[in-house]
Length: 290
Image 1 (cartoon, rainbow, N blue to C red):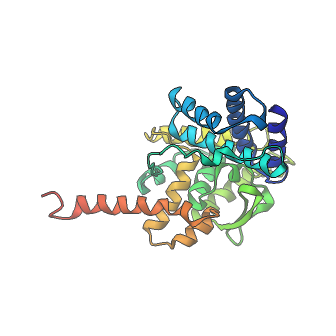
Image 2 (cartoon, rainbow, N blue to C red):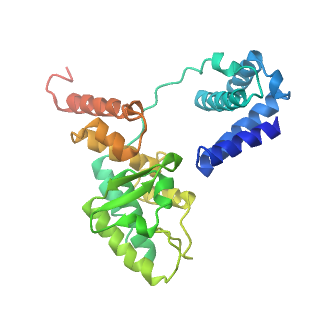
Image 3 (cartoon, rainbow, N blue to C red):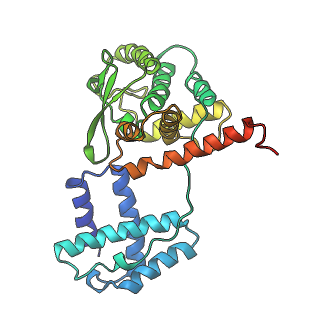
């Protein structure tokens, strides 16, 4: 099975242009599946898939993890079927484990203000960190999109950033005034490093900042303001979308800004907005507490 897995991963990398992070996740999921099945791909049947999902849940994995791994197996067998390695895709007949509805976490406006103002002082690192926090909240970028920015992707004159999203799809997103100011300040510090690297966000050695480093930066300042509940770069993306919706932005505009291919992906923010409205009602309406 390993040779077929490698062919599938090459297909994802070359033809589908998935990110390195996504590729690692597929590889990990298929390794777990291969360890469970231990048979040739042409002999994989419905019971093998069901047994794999059951084993994932019984071993203590979350249903979200089991569901993701089932989706990986579906994609893998779909590829093998299309290429003629198997005669059917039994994974299509296995239902996804019923998942609890999880609403994305987002910060209040006051918390965001505290967060973006937290990097204090002058110099390269505080300027860079302020620019990162401001841009994540201002434009709702994914962490990989932010770390992948090059200096020539940023048009400070027009207030726009060219982003390369999932599947290497490019989109242009606006940048708010505060974020632009922070980015201009950081750019001056960046020039002083005299590094040739085209990456916009650099570490202290002048190399491109990694996704993991960006996460550490966000977590560091979130803890510094007393927000410790699994806050990361994606939280600022959720916050960006939620605050836009609460401010009256059209859902399709938010979809375009986030780079979602499907409106259904963006619609989860409508539930957040309803929750916000209900909380506000409960706190403000005279009869709500009776």
